[in-house]
Image (tube, rainbow, N blue to C red):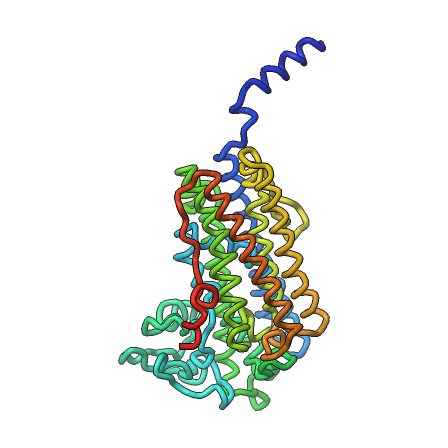
Length: 419
């Protein structure tokens, strides 16, 4: 018995193919985590859909608070899927439907007078579709008397090719639940009253029935969009098949998503730019003051991809052969460095999250001259940049063709930000 066991072990160790991390297995884990993340996003979006229906059926402080909480909960799993952007064309083509920002909210509903009206960049910036059942877009009369998912998706979203005409997705729903945050870099989120959904004489803001129709339609649209992405990453789905088709291209997609989200998107466009401009309008979740969580879970998503592990909303774990193991076989020290830098990033993003949850909100951190806020935000920015440098070394170590990570003027050409 001992001899047979020893012989089997010797054979196993002598077979490199069995000892080495298989790229296909790493990509299977990557796709499994994507599917699980989008499934959790869909589950929480359906809970949001139910909370929105309850708000519309019986508007009150309680039902509005419940809908807001459901929206906040829905953001955490979704943000962890953003590491799948940039490297996967299917995700890139789809993502703008659900998470486009910033948006000119006046396209959708009433805004404060300080918001202003149409601009040279966007003549529809204050169109207010909720108040106007007939609108003109690009010279065409549009019947908006019935607000449906189709009207939002096919006609209003990115109307006239303008990217800030965001009419759908998480942030349109966020605006309809919170309203504008008029506090600048002071404390406080949007304060839309529940009476904006009360029909009859007690309606505030006008057009409460149409506002409810818009909120319901936008939420239904979010659910259907997420159903599309769950299917894409499921067995036989287009996204999964595309990743598995070419192993080296699949590994490239993983690293492209990690590096581009780390550097140009999160460190640059979502964090450094807002700090440079001292502008809370550059917050990712600017109506709800939830930006600290969006940043944290973006970082978590990058870490998930590298470690090949994702904790689901029910507490279970999806895990398997990882990019970390693949790197460790070539350069164990580099793998240890990457894991340490990911930990540092999560620590710095966690400091921002902890401060915000303690009463020092993210928009306050962006105030000019606030040294504490600048230190918190730049701690996250610097850590994200630092981990990107290690991702670049991993690209070289794995002998992958050069990857052009997404950039940002705020990091690469700061003077251009103020031109």
